Length: 185
Ligand SMILES: [Cu+2]
Image (cartoon, rainbow, N blue to C red; front, side):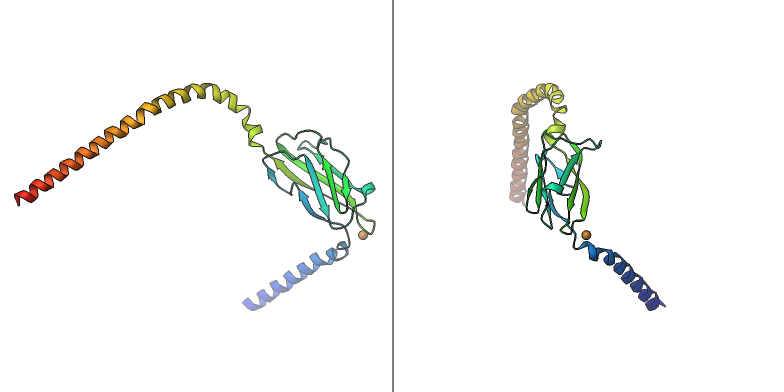
């Protein structure tokens, strides 16, 4: 019973795999994106100034489109794609604010068929997001910092000295007790 259901499951799995692989066979002749900078789903701590896409096949500069848009689907001003072999690069004209961006591309395969796709990356510059909160926190924080530093200079050493003295006295007392007990016995 178990082996039969396992065999059925395996057969179904193989059939599904065959279905998945079947349409992939003709697509192998098509151009595909091999690598991207920024990478897909990348979370960048600094805004990129360029987007570079490397494809499987040579690009035709006339039929290479790379578009960058923000989360609101507004197109970000960029230069036209600079094509070098199988690589296309766009330069971003303005500094990118923090947020999620979409890179959409449309290129042509060696057989003339167009290939298009898109992916996202996120800009999360800690300096950019922290910037508005830093000045607000700095004003009261500056004062507390000064008093904390002042207290820190006097406080901890005094406490440490007192604690040290207590330990010394305790150890000395214990030693004295031990010596007396030994002498008594
Ligand atoms: Cu084709």
